[in-house]
Amino acid sequence: MIEKIEKFADQSRTIISTIIGTAILSMLVALYGNFSAIKAMLLSFIYITLQIFGVFVFQSSLRAVKIKQIRWTMVIIMQIVPLLTIFVFSWIFGIISIKKFVEIIPLISVFGVSFFGITVLWHEKSKKEKDEDEHNDICNKECLKKVSTNVPKNKNVEIERISVKQGSDIHIIKTTDIFYIEAYGDYVLIYTEATKFIKEQTMYYFESVLPAQFVRIHRSYIVNTDFMIRLELFGKESYNIRLKNGVTIKASKAGYKLLKDNIGL
Picture 1 (cartoon, rainbow, N blue to C red):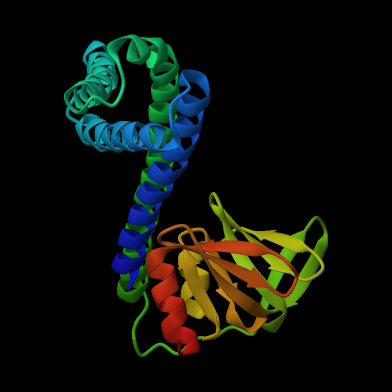
Picture 2 (cartoon, rainbow, N blue to C red):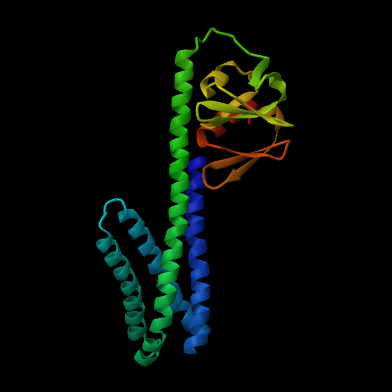
């Protein structure tokens, strides 16, 4: 299911880019070059489609090509090829004259560079989010493995209270009052409805001793499912958990699977 959502998101992003790019460029070409709407739309669609293809080629080669000069050369080539393609297409089918085509070259070139850059950044941002989620999934799996090896399976330990020292005061927190726990370096932050407490303890520890309603949804978060009110899809493989106190917490792919098993989705 997750893979289908991811594939659909990629396809949707490509379709949206193509539609928006074609619509804007065709409008500019029609107004600036005094072309008919059909001719402007046809040329714009071919040009934008080739730009989208160039974006995929460029992104696929980013890891293999480390030299900046080569990357810039690739960008220049990917701007020239679509321009030459629509010129040859127009010349063969007699859509526009060479003189008119030359007049709109500056417009198309400026738009093409801008569109290419924005599309690359958009796709790159989505790719980084995916890589981050995959990294979080690996961390979550490693965390679960460490907990399962460090805590005996027949050990039935569930704490009902947590003591936290703040200055000269010692606060006793009921686990039923905890909304979520956040990793904070070598410490954790324990959030209740009214306030938060800091405690020198590991996430592994709390993951192994907290009651069943607490789920590790992210390498940085353990959430109390009793205070959940909504589960929202955010991005391709990211999920937001909305709590009763209005706080939204991000869940990774692995954390989402654990959460589904816990609440019976």
